[in-house]
Amino acid sequence: MTIHPHPRRPQPGLRLAATGVALLAAAIAAWMYPRSSPPAAAAARALASDGQEAAAVVAAPVGDGAPAPAPDRIEAAGEPAAATALPTFEELVDRLVAIGRRTAALVQEDELEGAQTSDTEARALLGTLLARFADAGERALALLADPDHTGDPERGQARTFVLQLVLAAELARRHEVATVNADHSRIEPLVGALLGVLPQAERTIEVGLHLLDRQPYLRAAHEPAVLELVQAASQGTFPRPAAVRLLSTLWDNLRQAGVRTSEELSQLAMLLLGDADPTRRIVACRQLLADPRLAAMALAWLREHADRPVAAEVATLAASELEPATALRVLRELAPILDRATSAYLVLGARAPELVADAYRELLAANTQPDVRTDLVAGIGFTGTPTARQIVELALANDPAPAVRIQAGFVLTATADADAGEQALQQLLDDPRVAHDPSHLGAIVIALHNLEAGGATNQIDRLGRRLRTLPLGESSRQSLEALLARSLPGGAPR
Amino acid sequence: MKPLFPPTIALVALLAAPLAAQGNCPMQTTRHVPASTTIGPPQPCSGADYRIAEIEIRLTAGMCPSFVVYTPPHDYAVPSTQMTQVESIGAQAITMVTFRCVTRWLLFLPIGSTCEASRQMNVGAVHTLLTRPCATPGA
Image 1: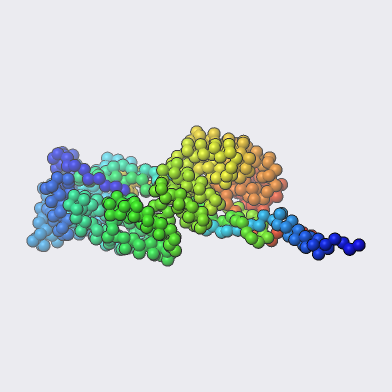
Image 2: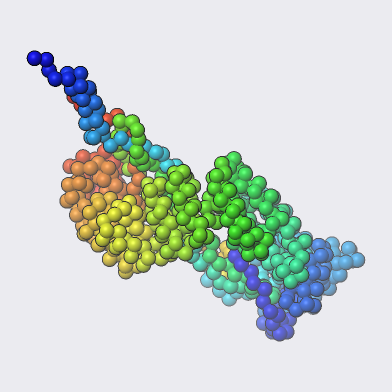
């Protein structure tokens, strides 16, 4: 989620009043938000430094199209009696959750007009909440750390989303103020507190990652807290992928902010390559692979140390993050220490199908690296592109490696019609190298399961009869019999 | 007449047997790979841009992966110094679940869309391997 401050629109209050659904609160909220002009920034600073209810607000939104009522103006500062009349932060969050669920119900009943009105009401109320509570981030964090106790999972999920939204907005506005004023004293503690809450539960990890990953909020001040999470990951008390993403984001931010140069980070990465903690080694490899001067060194290090667990994670990171041609080069370089990297090639194929297709053609022509060819066929095969079918048929007809051709069988049974899937598997069974190898036959049985989803009874029947006569391993034979029992009338081939 | 260099011939014969055995033995062992899950590229979900007051909230990718791949625990063969070979004793499916973003609710909140599994398929196979001693000649 990203949040982008917009320049102020002309006369927002009038526009909202004309629609009959907005509140004066929304106008005030608009006024309160940080903008790029110096007076607006000053207003935002005042809001940010207050930490208390700081504005005249309207708490009760309307959504019935009636003219907006006159606001109840309440002065928070110096008027504690009036302030107590306002709903609390938690009550506003609960109200947002309730509006959200009501909107959902309206949509499900096809009451789209009512849903739109309800949705507008929710937007206005969130604007009110953000305008009223300069410490909305801290308050949201406190509620996030405290799970919903109602026992209603849907309500708990909606509440988490509302809190995440509040935190995202709060981080965005504090970052804006911090950037304009070169003063991070308001955002850094909130980010620090978020990092502190992160390990509490799966829910907080998910929200925290969503808010911090690839965002500019992690800074040098947070390095100790991030490294603590890395340490927790090495002890198995915090998920390693989350730690990798946070440390990677921190390093990216440090480089972009000029706190550390690429040179310094690469030097640190080279030191961390030898670290006992895999999380640090993964982040170190990510840093080095992004540096064209040092990528070859990182790959050589991985090969030399046969660091398969790290290589597997680096392969996935490379497939997801690096420029596709670079990612492909990394995957091919890592092939000697990875038995297979199917999932990484699936990710890369989704990003750059033509690149993967070209790589397959090249390796097929050279008749090298059959394991990589297998993964390339998987990578392109499931993309659903026209090239995918061409490559898969090319592999099935021409590739000399049975494993590659079996991979083509997987693609066709999963993505083509039942007859094409059956034809592919029959063609594979015609090859004695496949038909006499229990290992290959085990893979064929697994591919046959793909036909079950399409209800291909006749095709399963014919293939089942043929497979029963072949030297299947015990577990494959059991799997085949279970499939036949489920799929065929009478539970057996005719 | 004494046979020529009988100890040498015996030594050669002694050495030749294991060498021949080694020639037929792939000298491999297994290495275990734990289960893993890989998340595919995110697809736009809850992707509409919403405005609240002066702030635009863009609920972009990251909410819904295009697919998730599960690779079960398995083994692969690596070179060994021992006279051993590996044998597949079972195949397991590499499973891919694809997701789609279903917009149900016209909310500005992310719960306005849901990321739902749309299809599960077997996209490949991995094997459970067993290491066995290579058969010795004459055994």
